[in-house]
Image (cartoon, rainbow over all chains, first blue to last red; front, side, top):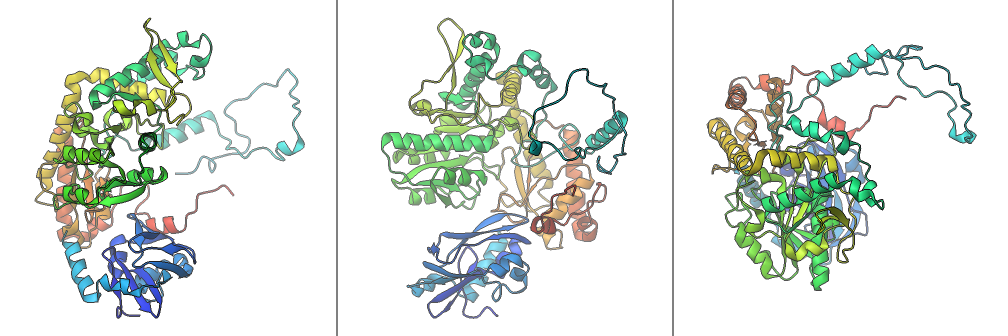
Length: 129
Length: 482
C-alpha cells in the first residue's frame, strides 16, 4: 500500500481512516531512524487509547521508544503477525505492517495531523538536527 | 577459546579427598537426591588456573585501557580503597551483629564509617541527611521518588505528574512511573537544555516535582536550574537531582544551593567505587531538612557519649528499602576516596574532568559534527551524521575504536542527538592517553571519507568479530549445556 490518505503525527506514527476505524503504524522514516526493530509491545483488543498517550513500545538495537495513539478510541484489532515478523516494518510499513486498529467516535481528531507532504517537510527538519 | 566444560576429561581431578571417617548418611527424601552425579567439569588445578587466567586476560576495564563511556564516569578506582575494604574487621563483619543486644559495641568502626560518610555527603551536596541503603543509582532514584510521594501524602497534596527533560536517563521516568506518577517529558530548547518556557507552560498544582540531571546528558550545565527549582517550589513540588553527572561539579557547586530537595549519588561514578557487572553498587540519597523524617530506616546516629547506634523509631519513614545498611563495602571505599581527596582534591576532580572533556571536544570539532558547540562540562556529545552520509554509522565508529584498544563512547544516547557519540574522559587520564584517543578518532573520520569499508569491517583484533545484534536480540538463545 502507498502513502496515500495517510496522516502523520510528530512522533512518527501514521493513521489511515476507513469508515470509523483508524489503522495505525510507524512511518518509514521512524523505522529508518530506529534501526533494526527487535521487539514490539502492543495493546490488546478492547484497550482504550487516547490521542497523544502511549499505546505500546518499540524496541530497536539502538533504543526503546513509546508509540503514541493518533486519536482517542478503543483498540478493535491488533496485528500480532508483525510482532513475529519484524522485517515487515521495513518492507511494507504502510501496508501489512499496520500495528493496531482503533475504533473512534471522533475521526475529526485526525484533522490536526500532518498530510504526507507536510510530514516529509517535517522529517527533513528532523534530519538537520 | 573452549568452554571449561569442553576441556573436561572424565576422571581428572584437582585434588583427592580422603575418605570420611564419620558416617555420611543423610536423611533426605529420595526426591531431593540426584539420580546421577552433577555434570561438573573434571579438570586438574593447573587446567583451571590456566583457563581462568586466560579468561581474565580478555577482560577489558579501566585497569587495562581507556574507557570513555559517556555518562558512566569510568574512573580509576584507587587500590588503597580496595585494601582497606578487605581488612578482616570490615570484610568479615556479620550484618546482624549491630542488632544483637551488646552488638553495637562490636561494630562502632563500621557505624562510624556510615555516619561520617553521611556527614561528608551532606557537605558535598548541601543536604540535611542521607540514607546509605539504596543498592544502586536507580534504586536511589526510586527511594527518592518514594520520599517525594510520602511528602505530598503527608501534606495532603494531590499530585499526579513529574516533569522530566527529554534528554534524561531512562531510569528517571521509570522511577517516577513505578512510584505511581504520570511522566511528562519537557522538550529541550535549541541549546540542548530543559526549556524554561515549556516548564512554565507545563507547571500546575498537580506537578509533584521535577527530575533533573545537571549537567545534563549533553554535558551542559543549565543556567536556569535555580529558576526551574523555584518554579517547582511555587506549587509545593520538589526538585530531584540525579547525581549521575556530579563528577562535573563536585566540590564546586552543591545541588542543595541550586534549590534541589532530593539528591541521589552513584558512588561508583563520582566516588570511584568499582563498576560491577551489575553490582554491588550503592546509590545514597540525600534530602533537605523538610524531608529528613521520610528517610528509610535505619539511620546511624551519634549518641551523647560519642558512640554510634542504629535508629529505627522514625514514624514518618518510608520504611525498609533494602536489607541491612546498604552495600557497606562500597560505601567504605567511597569514604576512603573522599578522605584521600579532601576538599582540594574533590575540586580538582571536577576541574580536570571538565578540562579533559573540553580538550577532546575542541580537538575533534573539525572532524565530527558537534550539535551543541558551547563549553561542556564532563562529557561532550558528537554526531556522526557526516560519516553516516558515507555509510559509516555511530556503531561502526565504535567498533573501529575497539580495534585501536579503547572502549567505545556511549552510542545513540542521548536520543535527541542523531548518531550520538558521547565521550566522557574523566579526570584520571593523562594528556598522552587523550591524544592517542583523539588521533584514533581523527583517523577513523578520515577513513570514513576515503575508505568507508575499512571502518565498517571492524573490529578485527577482538576474539570475535562483528556480532549480529539484531539476530541476538530477536532470537535470544542463552547457551545451555543441554
